[in-house]
Image 1: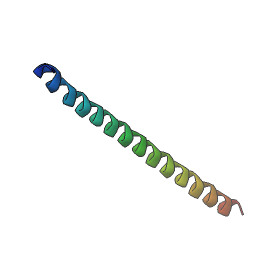
Image 2: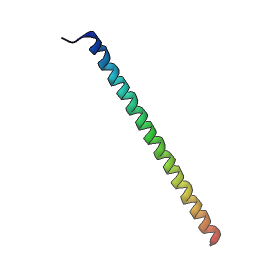
Image 3: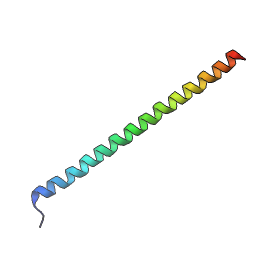
Image 4: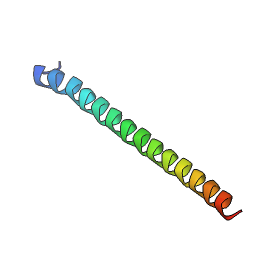
Length: 54
């Protein structure tokens, strides 16, 4: 027989785990977007530099 306290604690653990996973995924996604934008900026900068030199 489950105690009411354990019934209350169990879903809250799932809730916190879902929030943690969502925050982790958002952090990874935003860092990937930042890395991609930096790579695009570096690529465009190198192309512009080559064009100026040439």
